[in-house]
Amino acid sequence: MNTKTTNILVVGIGGQGVMTATEILAEAAISLGHDVKKTEVAGMAQRGGVVSSHLRFGAKVLSPQISPGEADLIVGFEAAETLRWIHYLRPGGLVLMNTARLVPPVVSGGLYDYPEDPVAEIRAQGIEVYAFDAMAIALELGDVRLGNTVMLGAIADHLPFPADVLLDSILRRFRTRKPEMVDVNASAFASGRAAVVHSEQTPQRHGAGCEAVLT
Image (cartoon, rainbow, N blue to C red; front, side):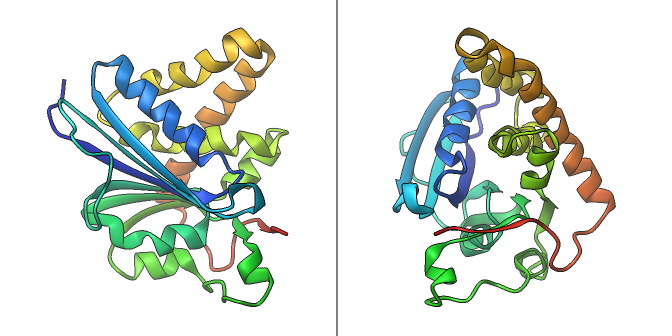
């Protein structure tokens, strides 16, 4: 087992499944014998408030908190939130982000401006970014809620353990409670992995991505 501690920061908007995704990542790490610590902060999650979740795993982890400049991976479920947390990424770290814009009430109400192009702003800092529209992929598969599994598929090949370990942790949740959802979640996971490969080949165009206004 790798003795290095892995730090993953998952951020987004309430209702996107940020906390569930972190729980599944934690379960996968635990299944391999890692010591795992995690913590979450949710602001009005039911109303589209911001949500962040810190996950740390390795041979021995003392604190669940990731400090600024220490995240190996930032998994952004929402574009502007990814940009807002970018200072947590370590030098040489990686960003995997959903380009769909879920505009929170503070923006739709005129209190704050939404960044014009979050992906471009992050890339301008010399950061490696894989950007793709997880919401559009989920909708193509027939259920926007699959965006969670799409995002997990995207991170799968950038973890210190095989992708199949993460996939098994996802499908295990459905095999007993909703077996009819196993195949579509497996497809969503595969689509997330493919989206990262496509992102490598096709730079994100300005303004691309689904948009939803939360009220």
